[in-house]
Length: 288
Image (cartoon, rainbow, N blue to C red; front, side, top):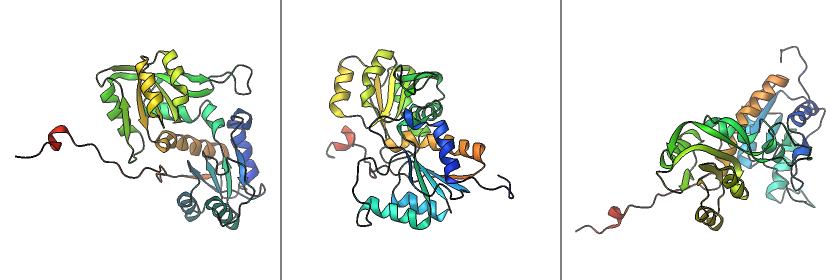
């Protein structure tokens, strides 16, 4: 955007976001689109965040952002009040008082191609990408490689132990880190990834015949039963870390399409803040 050009408006940014991530691609239960903001307000700077929390709002306001684009919805379930007496109500009030718009692209961005899982797959250099859970035939998102998650081939095969260390190195740093389930010496050539909660797609990972599946929020019983049935190895990373890579793609697209300035939040909004590795057997043994 040149110094003399008129900046795009909130409506312009929303139109571009909805062109790239149509609301019709979102799951029925999801709540995406413009949450707060006057469509006629000029936008010179956009803050890209995973979560709309007080800390990311502070960051956006301090940077002079006119608009926030978030992945996770602020208001996912129905509300009867946004009074400043509640956590989310206070955020809404802050945004309105600062004249900062808020837009959400959630499962519509998960399904898009390129979308959230493409950015995650790029961290591992995966090639030959295809959806893990393709959009249903006849649905608005059907076709063109759209769907949840991605399957691809690693540039170089790794053992599960090596891949786990590699994942911890290429993903954003969190206290949670990366944990894995399966034979540490298992060779991994094909990897499925899904940004955010992914244990609903364990069956698809097994059916796809991949060597390993990386996602977030894996639960004890589904993971154990999956492995007992001979499913691929599992890597469990922090939810925020699996979705943060998409913000870079989002920011680059908005700069190229609209000429706006963008800032990408690296604030770790994962709720888990402390990690302690279990001591080894030798460390547990009493000293003579």
